[in-house]
Image 1 (tube, rainbow, N blue to C red):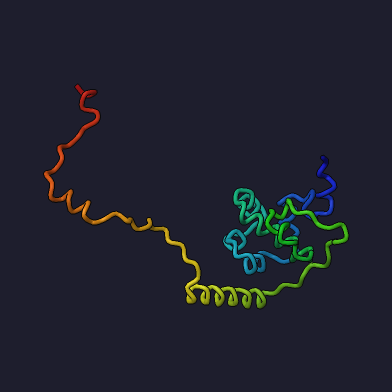
Image 2 (spheres, helix red, strand yellow):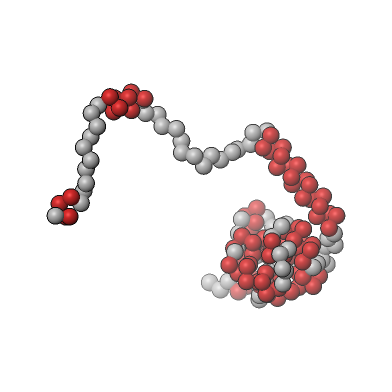
Length: 166
C-alpha cells in the first residue's frame, strides 16, 4: 500500500525541521516561541542552528514545536482524538482542510495562558489529584519476622568466592 497520498495534505510533509524553525522564527521570533512553548532552546542563546540541534535530539520538544507550527502558524483545526494521539508528522489531514493565515500571538496572551496553567495546576494539587509516589510500596510482612531475626545468634559471614581465592 502506498502511503504517499495520506501525507500529501499534511503541512509537515516535505518540510525539514530547520525550514520549519526558520519560518516560525521569522514570523513570531524567539521571545514569543519561548513564551508559548516554554522550551529553553528559544530562551538561552537562541539561534536556529542550536534549536535545530536540540530539537533533533529531543522528541517531546520536536513534537511540541511541530504541533505549534500546525495549529498556530498554519491555523489548522484541531485533529480528531485518534489523530491527536499520533505525532504531528504522522497525522493525516482531510483533503478539504488547507492551511490558513497565521494566528496573531502576543506576549500578553502568553502570560495570561501561563497564569491560567499555573492556576489550574494549583487547583489540581490542592484537590488531591492523582499523585504518583516514587517510593516503594509498603510491605505487608509481619514485624515478628524481623524481631525473630534480631534475637537469634548472628549468622557467620559467607564469602561465595572463598574457594576460588585459595
